[in-house]
Image 1 (tube, rainbow, N blue to C red):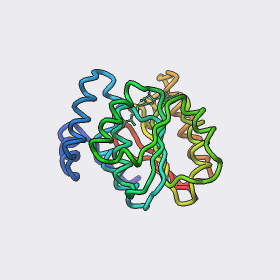
Image 2 (image 1 turned 90 degrees about the vertical axis):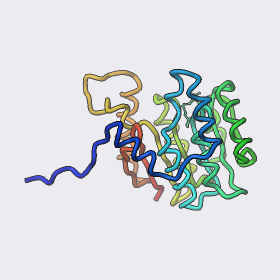
Image 3 (image 1 turned 135 degrees about the vertical axis):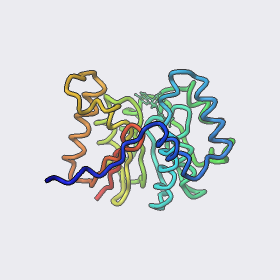
Image 4 (image 1 turned 120 degrees about the vertical axis):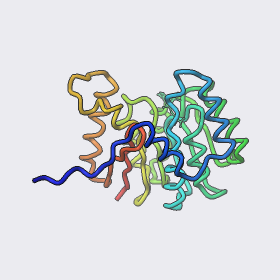
Length: 220
Ligand SMILES: C[S@@+](CC[C@H](N)C(=O)[O-])C[C@H]1O[C@@H](n2cnc3c(N)ncnc32)[C@H](O)[C@@H]1O
């Protein structure tokens, strides 16, 4: 008999327990979450609390000094990554929205990490392609428009140093990745992206059931 799959399904209560049992957020993060929530439906774009903690721990654990983020919104993931960097570390953030990233900048200032973060506004594909080809990043987080994930992956992975880590959000697309009747542009892009990660021999990867699915890949 096949062994029982080893995972614990989460319901709301168990998820609240999980979120409560991590190092607590400080006032800056709490305020940023509240301000983002006031934006209304858009707020779902913000990463989950446990993801933010995970990003910070990962960045710090690998001793990352240079990081890049594709998709910044109001700045929570960037804040988490920046806090995992040493004081002289650098995070390059790419986004198209001046309106949302203006909020981000205020919180980076409040948290005292603004001097570690450079924000470049414009289509991320253009900005990525304009960067030097040399493998200069230790850590990358991809969380922007899903149809371009494949392109972002290619541009990011080639610029990652061996041993560097790339994290990619929303790889389960609310479970739609395994529902063949779901044929929207985003889910199709995510499905095809997930297959391409698996076939990419430059990395070893794992898909984590964190929030909406988080792929972690380490460059070999
Ligand atoms: C899911 S949100 C990012 C959430 C963010 N990581 C956080 O923790 O709050 C996606 C972001 O990607 C940005 N975006 C969408 N299309 C883009 C593009 N072509 N180039 C750069 N950024 C883009 C949006 O403006 C939005 O801020």
